[in-house]
Image (cartoon, rainbow, N blue to C red):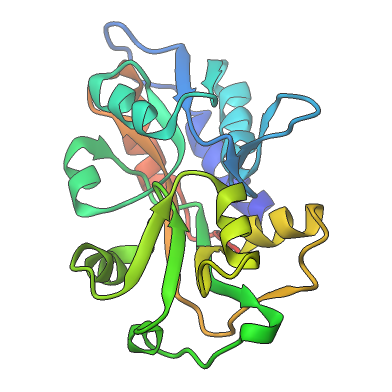
Amino acid sequence: MLKLFLLSLLMFLSQPVAAQENICHKVVLGGSNRWFPVAFVAKDTEHPQGIGYDLIRHIGDKMALKLEFKAWLPWKRGLKYLESGQLDMMSALYWNEPRGAIFQYPRPYFYNKSYIFVLNDKVFPYQHYADLKGLTGIYLSGSSFGEDFGRIIREKKLQLQELSDKKVMIRALFSGLTDYLIHDHADMFSYLKQRQLHTTSVALPTLLAALAVHFAFSRKSPVRCYYPKLTANSSGHRLTGL
């Protein structure tokens, strides 16, 4: 599926770009350093990798673009740099209405799924957010779970706390300070497995959110010259998270 996506995208991008002033040949690229499997930095190599980074490398190679990665920027600072044009694009970003007003988005290349994680001995039935009332939950700062659940968070309909560190989230869950945590399935399962904690915790079976992951372009960057091509040809060959 990914090969088909790359083939259709790269065939289109390899076509000549219309001559224009200050055409871009270098892309300064931001993104997460801890979002498995989309965009992360391996500790042993300090090399940005994942679906988003790998995909833009393929595109960059075909278009003879020089790529400069800024995967170590704090997330919120990276978004500010993208808005100001200090970054040309982000390797992986969810769409929401405020972001859509200031960034340009091609079609998604990945769908990421979020679930509720609990300890094995504290499983509870979950079908709807009302099932979480009376329980305490946590999620990682900067996370997004769609417009509907985002509204629930903003309106404080649930006892939810935002934390800035994944390790602190895990400690809170395993120490009983919280009843559940919300996170991307693939990323959290990988994190727990690395620490041999995956056998003592579980994701509840009901999906909380499935969100489209996009490249995002700064409206103040010359790299916008490639936006129409990406928009037209980020085809229907998309990957879906576990």
